Length: 283
Image (cartoon, rainbow, N blue to C red; front, side):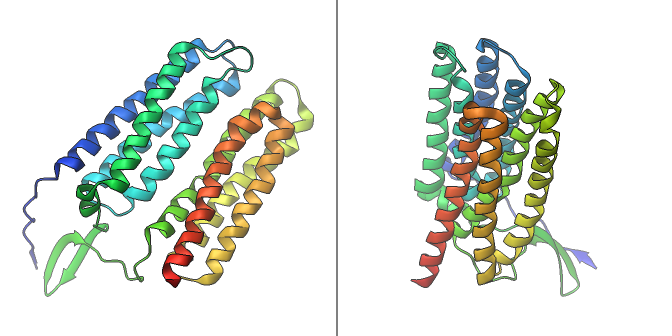
């Protein structure tokens, strides 16, 4: 069999090039701001180190988003939205210390990072050039007429709305947003609070189980199964019912704000996107 020739690469629009540059700057700013917050923190404890490390890992998320944008993938919009929203929450929860006022460098860095995230979302959703570029699906090997080619593979399922993709991406953040505070609570076990061991273990198991539930649910959600939408609502409510009380009990009010608020924002975004997708399809 013969191999098809590679397609000629088309120059990307200026808005797309500006977006990739902005994403690279945002990824670098995430690392710098988190290091500043950790440096100026009055107490550089275990919980702060875990939250800082998780927030810094989001810089890798922006690099993955750059790859999606360069390939013109449709998933870039919902992925960029949830990444920007949760990044603002993840960084914002570390700016304010337990006591006293925030350090000025941390506040300035948070303001800069928030502005960058807002600019990313604006370009993703308001730029016609970016919108016209993000229309491609994943590539794969296609055998047709005795020819092997590496090209875009159209999904076999029916087209889905952008809101449905947003709800899917938001739901995928449930598991890590549960595991991070569970790991922080694990520090209390190391400090001798053995009574918290069963709750921490349950938290870890629940966080891992949610990842598989969401993967199973969203696979059918993308295929338009009505029961999958109801299941995603039940998973979301169950995640909140487990995570928020454990944050309050094991981490206190500070932990509820720092770790519960990002999960609550992701859950509300998933439910709102699911609601909008249902009404859009009905219309």
